[in-house]
Length: 102
View: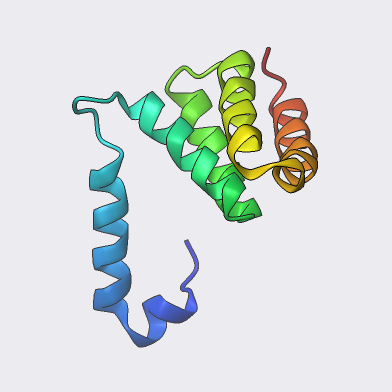
């Protein structure tokens, strides 16, 4: 992985962020898959395209289906309205098509 701005100038902050992010999605009362789907939903609501892509890929890697991803998108749209639907449709559909999952 190439160095990013934070890694170059405040490496301890970046290291702690990555450790916290890894710990937050470990299996616990909720499975890693559910936590990745939640993270994807939050990323959609925040309009963070790179975050959505990362969490879709991670969710799929641990067994999420296109149907599960679509249901999470539906919940985000219910809470965030039309702007989430328009934005998520483009990002999520493209990512699912690119990864070719059903």
